[in-house]
Image (tube, rainbow, N blue to C red; front, side, top):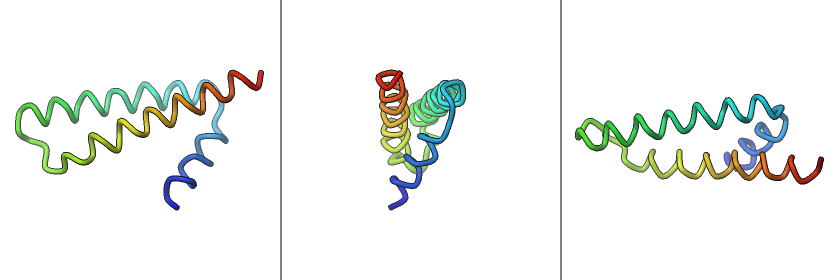
Length: 68
């Protein structure tokens, strides 16, 4: 149920906070990919988790835009 808790936290954020979270998460993904390319990344499953989090954030942003 960790995912539903994360989604609840995202839904409580404002539009500006969601945009900032999206930018931060994309930066994290870039850094993970860079570490993976240089063989410094131990947990490669983290890339998949971060990609899913980006999709979740974008989904919440779209939901909020449709409500307005």
